[in-house]
Length: 161
Image: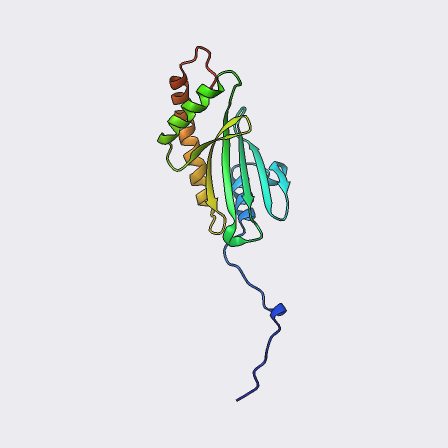
């Protein structure tokens, strides 16, 4: 038998498969007509955040966290749908939580002073189609959520438009 060659551990690297989630998001934004570089608000070795002006006063946030560890990479996509007012905040949040049971595939959260419809995905198997599907889920239920929230609150002045 021939000699068995030993390789130093430093020369052996782990090769991860799949697509880079940052590239997938950039491609997604480009296909939707946005410039990913202009939308990018934060970039570190662990995360990348984009804020996209989605409609008149609504912003879509896309956040990729855990970039260094592909098995732990997650993507968060959230759409700010309404500002929670100081007066009546308790009523609005209570109504939003009751209505949230009717949401399919997405959730409602309080982020800062906004109610946000969002979804979370694994970054390791992320595809453009998955991003598109989850954004459509958010868009499709946004109108229903706002209408139901207005009806539930029964406020004279409509806060949710």
